Image (tube, rainbow, N blue to C red; front, side):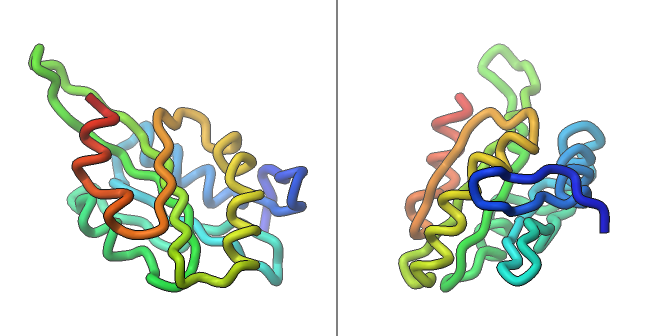
Length: 143
C-alpha cells in the first residue's frame, strides 16, 4: 500500500486512497461524501465509506457510528440568490461522547494533518452529537 502523506504530530499516514477519493469527489463529482477512519494498529487514515453522487447529507449522518470517532468530507451543492450554482466542501470531525477517550485524543491530534492532505476544504464542523452537525448548520455556513 502506497503512503501519500505522513502527519508529523501523530505519526499517522494518510493513504493514497484517501487523497484519490477526495480528488474524485472534488473534481469529478462521483462522490457526495467520504468517511475516513484511523486504523490504530497500522497507523493509517483510510477510507471507511464513500457516498455515491445521488446520496445526501442524511445518508452521511446515518453512516457515522454512535460510539467511535470519524472524519468526513461532504460536497454541498447549492444555488445562490443570484441563481449561480456553487459547491462548498465541508470537513466534519465527528467525536461522539460515547467514544473512547483514546480515540477522541487520537482524532483531535490527527485532524490538521488530514486537512492539509485534502486540499480544497472550505469549512469545518466539529460535532459530538447529530444536533451539532445538522443540515441547517451546513446551509448556514455555506451561504
